[in-house]
Image (tube, rainbow, N blue to C red; front, side, top):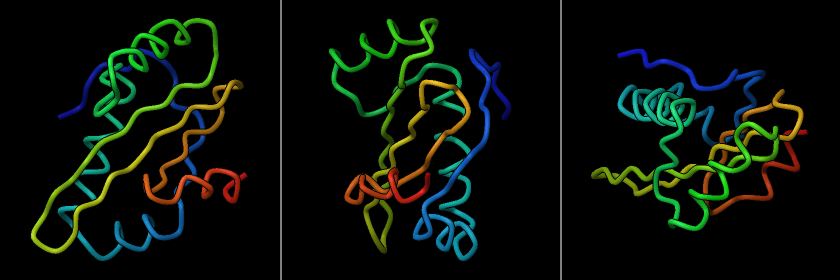
Amino acid sequence: MPVAETFKCGRLLVAQGINSRIADDLGFSKFIVNALNRHVSCDWGEMDEEDKQENDYALDKYLRLFSAYELNDQEKSVAVQVVRDIQEEIKALVEKENPEAVQQLG
């Protein structure tokens, strides 16, 4: 179900591992779409309260935003992070266990 965007999405970059799993796993693909919908509607997911407040502050100041979402399925537990850069051009999807993938995407 589409949700109202609170801010522009910009360009989406996806880490290779996540992209491969999206291509192979419909359930995971739905999880990713849901995570992105949550992110653009300011649901920061599995972040602590202080990080959520930082995101709320950063939102209209065009600062970096972070959110994290977890999927626990029968095969594998995975956590993804969504990052919006300060130019609001890039939204990166990376596995939480591989945050250096954000630098590799740029």
